[in-house]
Amino acid sequence: MRRLQTNEAPTPHRRVEDAGTPVHRAEAGLFRALAHPARIRLLELLGGGERPVADLTRALGVKRPYLSQQLAVLRRTGLIATRRSGTAAHCSLTDPLIAELLALADPVLAEATGVRRAVPQVPPPRPPA
Image 1 (spheres, rainbow, N blue to C red):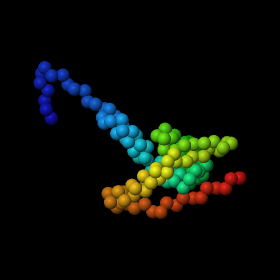
Image 2 (cartoon, rainbow, N blue to C red):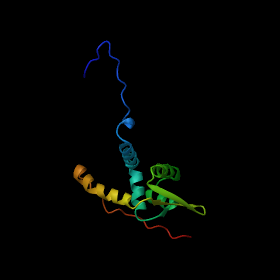
Image 3 (cartoon, rainbow, N blue to C red):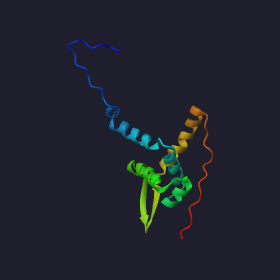
Image 4 (spheres, one colour):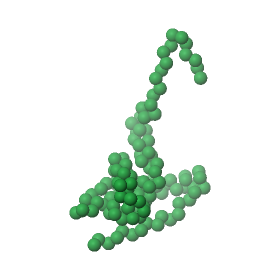
């Protein structure tokens, strides 16, 4: 590390968020949203089509407030959309390419870690009552 001369003022460090172009910041935001196992599982489930939030809660085996928090992150990032039908909320991927992105990560994951994704067991949606 270079020492400062006595007449030199220290240079402020740039925050990581300030580095790179707007595209790099957007990519970082996308990958931050993907950096959680529950959110990845949600995207896998939604890759099969629109699902009621109640089904997602059961499929993940989590409590509703926790699920709502994870869905909010995915919504803010633009990965999912939510629509209301009566009192039920339904979620879907905003673009089928999101499911493809997850599928493309499989060979990289397998190469880097030796972990292979099992065929995801996606419980079928419950029929409307």
